[in-house]
Length: 508
Image 1 (cartoon, rainbow, N blue to C red):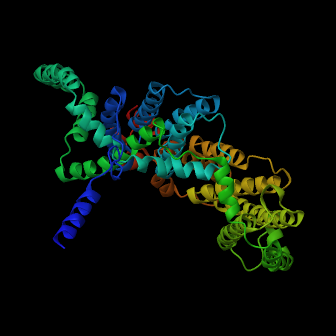
Image 2 (cartoon, rainbow, N blue to C red):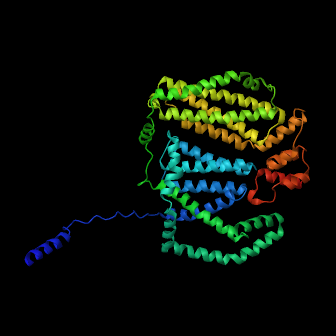
């Protein structure tokens, strides 16, 4: 019995011994990130640019400095992409031109809302530019929404911790430490002489004194808690920005966007019988027909330039906006639902599906046209405002998009993403570079002087922006004292062409 127990113990011990040359399975380790010298340097640059972005784009009204900042961001991105040996195709060169062009919007207008829209536009455009160059694209993506999802969300987040690792490796590199030491010592030695020269310059010229005072507020803010708050925001934003560059330029383990996978993804949504789709949409179309017939005189009054009985101009126009917003959203949602879920859809969609889509687009275009006519009638009576300009711009943009949807039904190979993107860019450029506040002021003043407007609200012109104030002052609608009280002059962080011209006009 003892011998048996001893033999079993030996067998158990033998079972614990691994066969020679065979290793036990281990949890795979995450691959260590490696960084080139340019990436380490860019990790520092990314942090500086991001802090400037937080300060000059998010927490301050933007101007010349923000234009320079976005030019630096675009240039830094291009340099980094070229350092990684990526070539820039023709379409990406056009995107780069757009990035530089729209960076100037912060300098040419004082309209805060347009600057905010431009900020969002540049952010999306720069994200796509980095993605497109790295993917070596020579045209806009056919499945643009999928590409934007990857470029804005998936890729940057996948390497969110890359910047901290790059900074750590930069700090631990003795070569970098040796190069930085003499630079830091030289800067420290230059401080006394620089301060003397600065004080002399500030004493010599008041404008120089103002400028450096603004710079000092930026470098050494009086509210210490506020700068800590900005730094707290800067850290994750900087990690995001560097992660965007690093993930796109190091593509070995990247989840590349595959057009075939996009088609399969779209196909997975197509699980509703076409007959069910048609029966769902038919009552909606029938209601639209009844609505248009019953409201013919009401809607056509807008085309004829007449005001229906029982309505004021403001009530008539506002009712048009409500109709436009609701019908546009409903119809766009229904069109997307139809074409995304119909079992027989896509490139080989049947004629019935095309007709239903076209009819819905046609109804929407009719309502948009009637609403635009209402708006023209309203503007002719009461003049322009910012809201009237923005809504008119949006209505025209919606009309263009629905026309492209109609064309797509009969030209299945049409790259609708490309056409819609190009049209939006042109429309957005018109909105930004036309300086609408100046146009509003000029139009209302001219219409009032010719007797087409019964009253001119100068206080509304003063409340808009320096674009409007400058136009009103030049046309003698407001006094210099009123312009002086409402102008944004003397603040270099928010200075733009209109503010600069207004300040010069007041001082002359």
